[in-house]
Length: 312
Image (cartoon, rainbow, N blue to C red; front, top):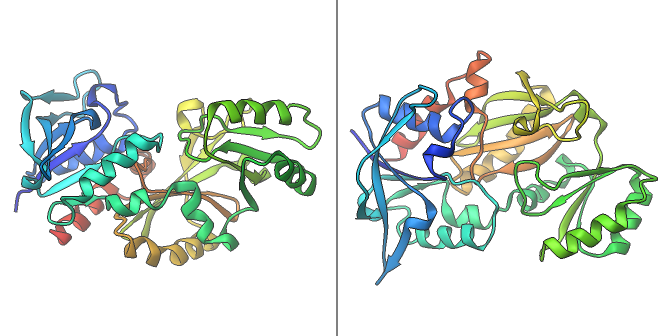
């Protein structure tokens, strides 16, 4: 049965199709004969309990520089859709949270992926703390003294915004780095929320592995190796992707978190693992499926739509 699918995302003209998961999911949906529609979060509205958006019919092509065609904008009641993909990139701010409140009004009659209520209640750097034995020592705070004591205990640390994304604002501080206090002053000015501090994992020089889970089951992985000049492994800041297989420890991690992912209706999830430790559970707009397929791994877009179609 053909589905009507609306994709809530950053504008499709801005994506890099070589590595964009939303684009890969759209390609596979189109290949299966589903109808695709596109809208950006600023086009989402609610009046008198009806959640609507100005959507455009979407056709996609795997051609760099000519990867999409959009129809004329048309205001539509989103409850008429079969599926909505919640795929705009963070930051996970009040604007993002508001979209989850609106989409919650039509889910699950219209299947929103991932479940908007659980996306809202599972911030990626907080959700992971439900599994403290699977992650490195972690502090969430705005208290300078707590941070100083944490560094005194563990030496090298990572500090990053609690609701950041894409590696933005991630700092690696060594034991004797004298910039810690100044950095925290800047964080205080930039962020109202607490920030997150973790023990630095030296294994990151060998890579930060992205593992994709579909409906709670691990289906593929890619390793992201940071450049020599950076502590971050994100590919858009120079990280190098390479083929990866799952270790026994990584399978253990996935088996532990899988039931919680299924319980929360998370069909598509990406976790980050450094060495033996999980550092994040990404549920907002996880990426990596094109890289996994490019290195000979599973066609995760196909597995994703298999799972969605089964729920419809």
